[in-house]
Image (tube, rainbow, N blue to C red; front, side, top):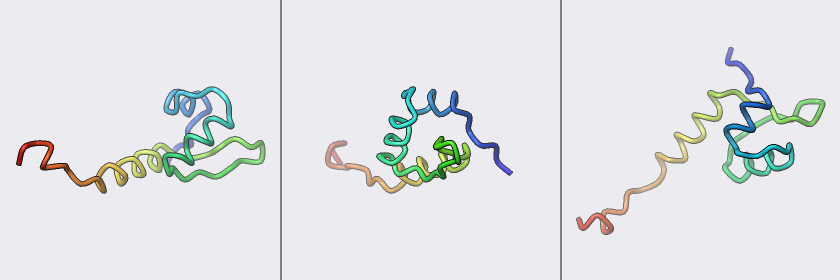
Length: 68
């Protein structure tokens, strides 16, 4: 089982300190999470990494910009 990211880790990854800003950033970047009973977002590093990897692999290279 993957470990759930701490609030400190979420702050470091998102660059935001407030819970609402962290949640907004997660939503903007399409990163799924659950809300705990205290309103804090909960997700694992695996979910975070997989979402970012899937997002970056779906971007097509711009060969015209590379002069090809």
